[in-house]
Image 1 (cartoon, rainbow, N blue to C red):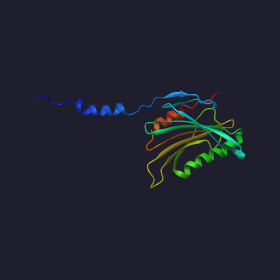
Image 2: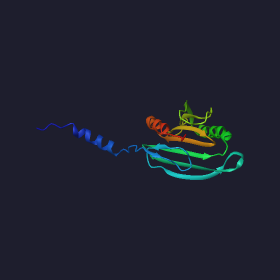
Image 3: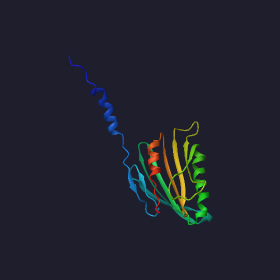
Image 4: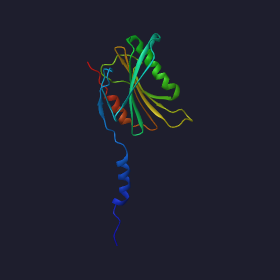
Amino acid sequence: MRRPTLLVPILPLMLVAGCSPALNWRKVDPEGAQVSLMFPCKPEREERTQPGPAGQPVVVRSMSCKARGGQFSFTWTDLGDARATSAAMRRMHEGIARQMAPRASAPLSVRGIAADPEAFQQAFEARPGQPAQQARQAVFSREGRLYQLLLQGERLDAEAWDVFLGSVQLPR
């Protein structure tokens, strides 16, 4: 009589693990952003115009992609005035905070960003009674340019967020 091998019970687990999408990190240099960063998947680019400071229109650009159940997004715009970035960062944070419950926040360690108390990273979770959702947001600025990194999904990979945020490089 043959004894069953351990490969039989392990085989389905290996097949499932082989089908889950891996994070395929790649360097991206978004045109006009004056920054480079890593995305775990091939991002798509979008652009829209919206009212900026004092009502003048600004072009808001973003890149995003989905991997491992999370949506990785990078958004930037040039406000044309470094004095306008603090209020804009605050509005970006407040926009998510109206929809989700703020959790832990932490300072940013992106070399070359403007020193500003509004520049930080924050975790968010769905409010009670809402579908499961988490988000991580980082907002910062440099020379009138406003930047936001966002990762959102049902359950987030903390290590992927650290790589995404840690990959941001601003030219000197």
